[in-house]
Image (cartoon, rainbow over the protein chains, first blue to last red):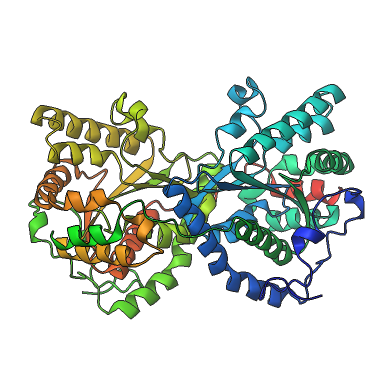
Length: 287
Length: 287
């Protein structure tokens, strides 16, 4: 097996290794492993830093295309249990590109106004504009996880939502937005370690919420809900990836690589100016 | 004269040197100088990088305060002629903090919908939420510059807008948003150099707009409009700073320092948890 992209450190492309196809079993994915990567933490962290400029360059081209009238965008959807590393992914991977080209949205518990609308209403308002790299920290997938785990919706409603999500994501695809969906997968014991670390550090206690402990009692139900949601909504046009995330350096490297691969597939070039360069040089010279 | 903050490289605080008070004359500010700083470009760039983590740490505390129910925010307003370096400031200075705590807005020519409303309407929709570092790339100040230069509004309307802006910024201040306003000041000849560089580089041609050359004919009118706008709207609660910006490294260092100084004045601490830490440790241990 040879590396497909020099310098990314993977001996198998993560988009092939970690994509959700059929058959798929979340229970059989070991969140402590680092599939496809040769090397240890230090290697992974070094590669992450070395590849940042490449990701930033690709994103800049997408942004330029959007400015020049292009309609394409890229949307990264991040899901995962509390402490899975969604926020860190935003800061360290998405945060490495030019902030001017990034559109972030973090979806918490819906407000009263949001609840009064269809579950996709608040999502639609935060879709990335043309040329942008959008990133959702939680998303419309919360609405097929939380209410299901707690028995607030029945199976008919769940089916309706899966179907609505598939239609919605097809719409996005048809309108030029490439959608990548990532579940950061940690183990129950790793979550306990991370929650404990938050409680121990005065600079991190604000991130802790007593509700996070309460939800741990529903771990197995959440995994079952994720299994179904991923299986029912992983499509060619909006694929899911389950990324083992007990090792933050590994999950970050994978998501960086998924973004790079997606942008490379878009075949981005600097836009052709919509004006005559030589003419503008002459005009400028006269001022 | 001694340094007030070790490590920032300034022998006089930029917030004192560059603030717009009375008397004030924009015409007398030399955009090629680097007031208050001892050192050359390499020193400036090194300090900028070294100080990034300090700025990021302060911003993180503001963000945490917002999550814990605090109402404060910080808004950086960037103005300047085309190519003055507003975008680069966003990428390189604001972009150095955690992107999760940043709320950016770039205001271009108003849309038809925006024109149908008062000029502050679109601005209000983009104000930073509690805990956020907001950054405006252009702002409501465009509405006292462009229409004035082109004679689309009369002096009565201009006065009304100055007054509306002062009231609006007082409101922001009263609601807990600290407002810093920065004019990145370049010379006419430096702008010509930068526009020319954009035209010469295929990776930058998309940033060039023929209208930028047209507007150069109004340079003096723009400077007169800035002179008035800054004089009439620099207040204790929302001060203006004119930052010499022919040297990008210097203007970035100054804005970094203005942000650091503003956040330091906010006296930010990590929020006290709204729960009993020991109790939560016990609960977690049982899961």
